[in-house]
Length: 309
Image 1: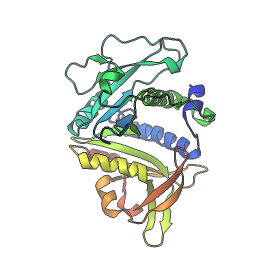
Image 2: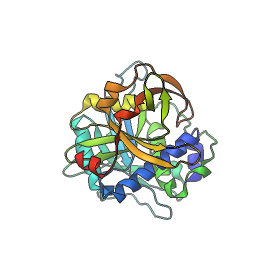
Image 3: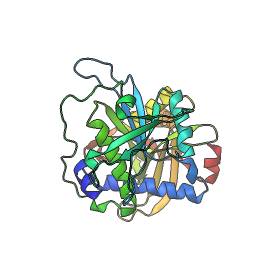
Image 4: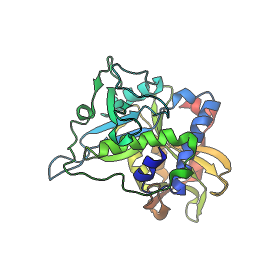
């Protein structure tokens, strides 16, 4: 797993690690409040791109959620649908309402310990009788990649990734590389989706320190990429209202928790500063542009807040 991640991740920087830890901590926190079964596993959302002068950008979308690979388990090609987490099934119904088909992806390794030869069996969720499909069926609206692109060309050091989170990170990257190696697509990660009383909430989960701007006051920042993804969910809506969740810390060195904060995208759109600023390195290792959101527009994420969602 470490060897594969070292080749697939362009950068394993502190933002990447702390973002991963924040996702783990949020799941533990929700579990402690009795809501652990209301958050879905992470996955990816793919959208079509123009290729060779044909096709329309973002005309089709597919969400893929992988079954996490566990070390030491023997993976065979599944003959029938596996047990899919109920929270994920509920999320799939909401995604279907906004035109996004969702698939649960089960890995199969024809050659032991060779992740580069993985095969995937897909089961369409939110379907009364999900049948096994291959990638080509699920990605039929996506142009095939006509020339090989090496997604495993990096030399990162994944040793800083906590051992407990290696299977999840490895499986997500394995799926991304498998799909991107075959099809042309724009891709963004899904940190998770929280299933409320009647509404599904796609989540963007980040670890942040509070910053200060003399015009805004205290604020939290969100990169332009995640902002655009949350805007997509808001535009398609259905019964989805995305959330930006912040694990607020005092400083990046010790990561001491101050509080869990959240804000719905509608409030971000209303109150975010129209003037963004250059940020530091993002989770992929590149430069970022940050949109500033007043901290006093966030609410505390506690049991009472979760019951209201």
